[in-house]
Image (cartoon, rainbow, N blue to C red; front, side, top):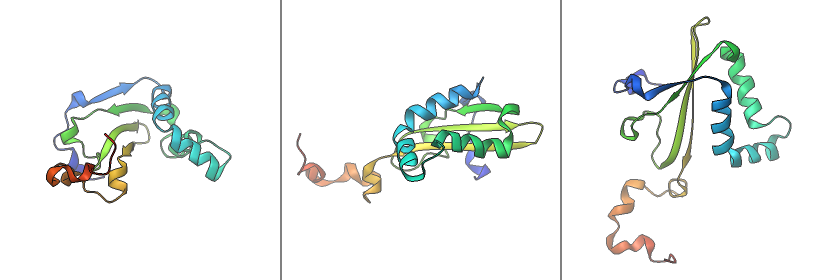
Length: 134
């Protein structure tokens, strides 16, 4: 993580989350498909349980303050090109003096297929839509 990417961050973009359940609810809602694939591939523990264990090993979640980060989309240092949505959380343990940044996002299939998002609107005469049902 590059600290310089946070030079435009404002305090009002961070929100204190009272409990793990807030993170859990967002994670389970938006990562449903990834969680299904995780179970099919690895079996055993769910993706959320695996994330919980990994975070707990590093920052001891029972002692953490959890913050969600809701930036302006133009100033989000975590937002990847082609992202449809994203969530960022910080898990902060004052006692251990540790912070874990955890972000997850959904990328457009167009990015995965090699299309450049910036060029989509510059196609002449809507050529990109020629073979689509409208």
